[in-house]
Every structure is written in C-alpha cells, then in structure tokens.
Picture 1 (cartoon, helix red, strand yellow):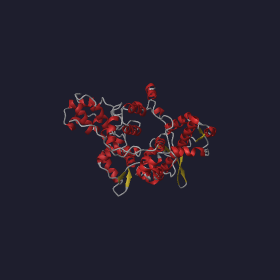
Picture 2: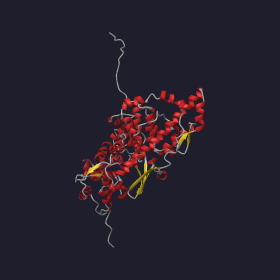
Picture 3: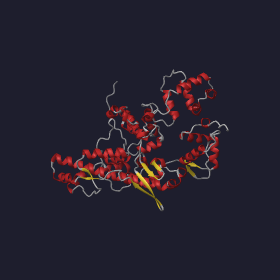
Length: 482
C-alpha cells in the first residue's frame, strides 16, 4: 500500500548576522592592500562618497530619518541572536543602522588566469575554492584556511583558532574544518595547507598510484624517520625501517619526486615588502602606539550630492538615498576598524613591552583570549584584527600575530613563551662546536640549566620548526692544524 505525501514541520535555530555586522567584520579582516582596493571601488561607484579631511559634519537630513527607521529591520535579529555579545564584540554602544558590502570584493578569477606571472598563492587557491562547489559554510572555512597560510603555503593555525576566526558569522565545528582542510590540501599545488613538511610529503605520496614501487615504504619513512631522510644514509634508513638497502633506496627515490615546499613558485622575495599598519614609539616611561595615517583615507559625504538627495524625487531620490546610506555605513565601518585595530595593538604592546627592549628572548606567553578580555571584544575580532596587519617597532616590522605564543612551564612555576624558547634554542645551536654539534638531548639539557625543562621530542619539534637540521647534518669536519 502506497503512502501519500506528508507535511512535516521542523524547528531549528540558525544564526543570522545583520548586514552591518558582516560589513564591519569584512573591513576588519582586510589587509592594507585589500582595504585600499575596497575604498577605491567605493569612491568609483558611489557619487555621494569623496575623500575629505576627516570632518564628518555632513549628515543625513531629517528627511531621511524615517527611511533609516524603515529599512533597519536586522538589528533586532542580532540582538535576539547574540544578546549583549553583539555590542561587546565591537566595543561600541551605538553602531550604525546597518552595513552593506561596497563594491564587488570577489576575486577576478579570469584576470588570475590571464596574468599568471602576477598570480599569488592566495589568488590561485581562492580561484580553486570558487570552482570547488563548496556550500556557503564550507566556502567560508576554505577561505579562512587560505588566508591563514604563510608565504610557503603552510598552515600554522590549529582548527580551534580557525574556528574562532570564523565566529560569530559562521559557527562551525572542528570536524567541519578538518574535512574542508583535507579538500584544500588536494588543491593544486598538491600538499598546500599542510601543518608540517611530513604531512605535505605524505599527501603527495598518497596521491601516487597504489602500485608505485617503494610508495608504501616511503610513507612509513616520512611518518617515522623524516630526520634520517635528510641525511640520506641508506644503510641507517634500512636498519631503522627493517628493510633491505635496495628497498630503502627505491623509497628514497620516490620521496625525492615530492616537493617539501610545493608553493615555492609563488614566493617572490624581490617584490615582497610590507607597509606597517601600526607604529610603536619609545616614550620616557613606556611606549606610544599610533596607526599609520595612510591606513584608511578620510572619507566624507559629498555636500553637493547630499543637497541633490534632499531635493530629488522618485527613482533618483531612492538611488541617492541608498548611496548615501552605503557611504555612511562605510565611513562608520572604517572608524570602527581603526579603533579596534588601535585597541588590540595597544593591548599587545602593553603586554610585550619587554620584547621591545630586550628582543624575542623576552617575549611573554600571550593568547588571543587574553587580549580579547582586556579590550572587551570577541576572540574572533582579535584574530581578524591581527591577521596580515603589521607593526613597525624599533626591532623591525612584525605581523601582530607574531606576539601571540603559548606558554611553557619553565620548571619553577613560571610560564615562558614558546617563541622565547625557540630564540634560546637558536642561540645554543649558533654557539655549539661545529665539529661536535649538540644532539636534541644535549640541547634539552642546556635549556634545563637555564630553567626551561623540555622533553627531547619537544626540542626536536621546535628545532624542525626553526628549519635547523639534525646534529648529523650540522656536523662539520675539524679544520686541519697548520
């Protein structure tokens, strides 16, 4: 007996963000170059917007107050969805009535294809994200992964950090991020977005045909004997893996077909330069933090078009009124961006003041959560405010994310920054006898003498992250005496 169609009612909850919050989040996440491009597009497409001297005295007349009230239908949704967190996230009590995207910020993928010499890794990957058929949520995750990659195409942010960077607009699970990450890692170049060299090599090896001679042993060697692979000691590799010399040699040949830096072709050091977003200057008693005055040019409403908007009627009036609202939203969004960036930078400088005097050995442990609590914003806001934002200091230019570091127990109840530990490790290696370099255990013992107690495996991990080869590869023959 066939059953007829049935109607079912399903209840569920879904977080929706008002357009103004999406716009504010988008502006905060933009780096300096993308921000200027967004502003240029807005100036080109919106006649009511013009460069000014920062005087925002031009305002919408009372004629438009009713319109603003009528069109503001999304603020209530945010209040219901986020409660007090909405205002706390940005640190402002009075947000503008609404934001909407200005211009088309989507990448011009046709231009990327037609100008391969100018293509960046980020553009290349975003083009593939656009063609991958992701859902809206997965596409947001993939974009977050792409924006988090370093210049070599490696991913250093863990899933929890990526999850925080997507909130509150996208509330996703760690499992969803891991699933999307696996797909991105199989984009071209294969192995991009890996967390380590071994992971990148494994992805490339596993993509080879299953019957490739030496493939299985190659995967085993990469997983467990990466350091020995660098020494290319075939007999030692064979003994460690319990294999024959000829099998180890075949596996090594397979591994050498892979590229530990698959994104190297996108790195152009000659064209790489950074303009800081923030400056820090020494004062007699502390440090002063200021924004780059060229960060975002002052914008204002064009007074002539503002008068026309008051007098226009019909479709012209609606067009000018909508452009006026867009201009107001952008002006307020840029002001919010600058205030958030300054507040986050000041909190970081205040915590890491010893670094500016004594260098990276004096870096203190610092988490994004601590800055978010101090500034009074959401942790995801701190992540966006520090990604691809640079600070000029007396010790050079650094990405703001550089100052975040997990804490390591130094053995005496104190916490020391992982970055500071790496700096000490680098110094120890630079001072070692070239003919008898320190093993990882010897390095751990010397760190313990300075009050930092780490396991040998942890020392080996930090050494690899610093790009320092093992002791066997660092050893240099003694110079013959004359």
